[in-house]
Image 1 (cartoon, one colour):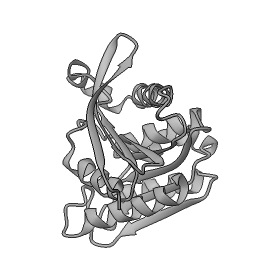
Image 2: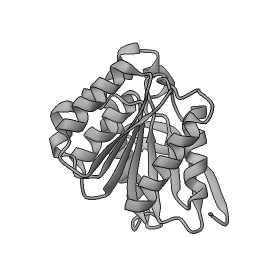
Image 3: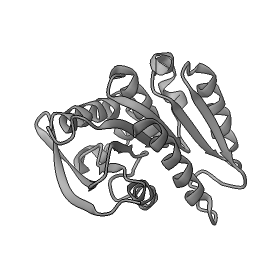
Length: 214
């Protein structure tokens, strides 16, 4: 259990824009988990905030940030522009690791929905710092061309009642050539709103990240 949490608002410079985020650092933190939100979501996502809280309790540093500005998010197509949001993720990662306080941290990505595709694509482009990936109800199939280049151990979590997404995750699982696991949570739907479902996601993600980031 983390003994103290230091949390702060951050602004991440990406070219000529600033993206808002929340960074929380337990004093014992060794691994850094960056959240890649799904379409139409951002740093205020209650589901990702819940998962981040569980990860911090395990001693992991967390960063939740908006992948798009408010203006960009008004353009619906931007939410599904995997190249754009993967690039934002790689730039945010580089910015974080340029900070001397963070440069020794091992990086993990937690991606939800379309954010999972961005996380996998970003990890394929920068394999050295990224050591673990977790996808929650993700669309990893949207990053299919880059999946064979992913080097980080990857956990795909899908709801048992999310039939179409299960199939897409199975296809992505088959394409991945790293240590991998496909976890299907019985009775859960796409958003894991059922009692205990999100808790199961958070615990599985925490175990995965602790294993590979600490």
